[in-house]
Image (tube, rainbow, N blue to C red):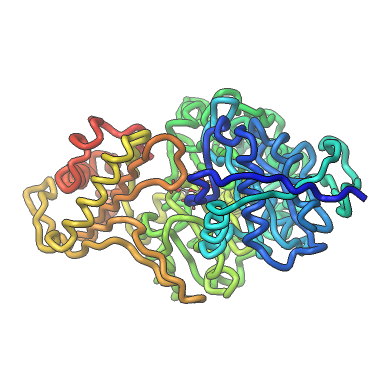
Length: 551
Ligand code: G16
């Protein structure tokens, strides 16, 4: 038997996981021992996995295959008994969550920097998911980080690479390594939730056309297996459906800026009826109707309001959960349904306890994530299927008609996020620190509403969350400024960027009057945008006169 090698090492600074795992430039991960240190820190932070199963896979980006070989050797050397690896190293984040749960694995390691660009000059990332299939909670990520600061050795094996292309089982050391089809389990789960017969009829009928843009990221194989092979959509419905290590040079972030090609198609005269895109690791989604983009916050609310039409959710929702910066549209649906709407910090990991405890069925975030208790991650393909199921159950109604009908019933939460990417870290931290320091002075301050009237600040705080299940407290999650007319501005720094800081400014205002709901978003938010500038001095501090991305 091959004995584990004990390799001496020294800590690297900065291995603290962010919003979703450790994300750095590929060149940082390529440093000798960098990946190994983090992986060993993960294993050292866990207990009781001797002989257990670990799931490993990633979004196919550059360095994915190299990292997988390293992780497989280390997992075997550390005592895992079985290591399940997605064929060719491919495994979307939601599929990883599905497989961890279905196969009763101890946990999983997912290699992805999500929507961040890939390739040798791009980003790489790694995250650990626990046995419930969800992102490790903060108590584990903090333990991993503490371990990484003190690490002195890692364990590995001196064995040949495994063949990632060939399905089947091989042994390395005392462990069995199984290369499995990454698509099948997830596709089977989808078939239990949605009305595949009705969706298939819609897609095969010829009158309805869809377009799914996989952005050369991980969802291509999943989309082909489900939309084309199982549901009968024409092959031409899929765009950029082959995963590439550099995502074809693109930025696999499904938003109107980076998925501009999809938006252009959906706004053309002969546009399909339904457009969608997913991100690098397949957990985000964008939904576009003909001439109409659905904001992620609205999407969550519309899905919740139409869940009774979908077999897997027809028995009712236990609750809804959304991240704090996500608009309050879902809260209105929850109130209507008489169920709770939980408000969590940004990061899917905060939904895990709520889902495990049966306190929520649907979850969503403004950052293009929607999901449910079927797995413990957000799920791009799931969201697309949910929309298709709703469209099949509301024949003749377009995406736009369904959303506008929703606004008429519940009111419209006009919403936008402004991102300032790659900002100087000191300037960004200073901006937030000064806002925090000014919180006590803000209540009562008056801001022009743009129509001659004024709005007064009624809430100013730094969001903190107490998990209702385990009582853990998370502080410093974003500066909230709320006004007496119900509008709100949130300022926070992203926890997923790899270059400088990204300042996110979330803006929302409620419009109950159907006559006024057709207003252009940025125009409607103009006075709030001006208020955000007055509150935070964004231009002066960042040196930017406009956001990098507006979603
Ligand atoms: C991750 C998290 C999400 C979060 C998003 C944006 O998504 O899983 O919960 O909303 O990052 O986070 P931030 O605003 O800190 O950049 P993903 O798709 O990047 O894994």
